[in-house]
Length: 217
Image 1 (cartoon, rainbow, N blue to C red):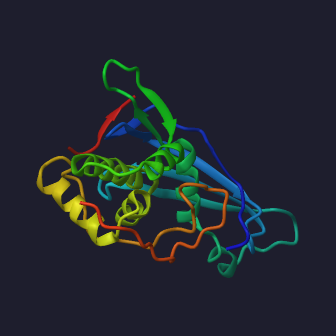
Image 2: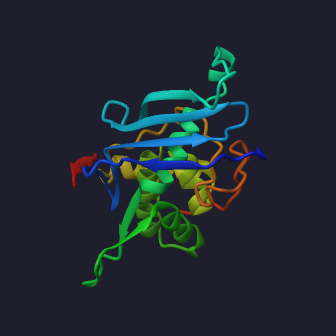
């Protein structure tokens, strides 16, 4: 997709959802975007953590026309990409706390920096791969992105290997919230470089390698 509009996240709640592995996100936030192709106006969405779905969800969406002479028709509304806006804005508000080993202070980093660091890491021991997969899975939950795809792409493994890792994480009790099925297609967002073009249908080829959310501030 050659056309990319800017998304602004704003009005975050102070209350944050803790998904484990240092992954946190605001319970509620808003996002707006203008300049979307074939959408003559400003789109506003409200995103909330949905306990039933076990992920973030759009609970409200609105489109305000840009000027007189514009009619908001059903055809225009079909061009509004609410899921894309939610995931793109989540990349600006989700964070990961790292570095809590050997007395180090926690460092809170943006989620895309975390994903880039994990992706750049070399070979891992099996236990390291398991914990990395759990962390990335929880990031995917926070940004409402197909989790097994994000685990496979970030750890640079096959999706079948990602599935086995997450099944092991669930069955061992390390990540009981894991759902193995991929319930939806990936939005057209590159989680490592949100401003760049991205083909969500592109297959990943990589070598095989060997409790639930809580609420806080």
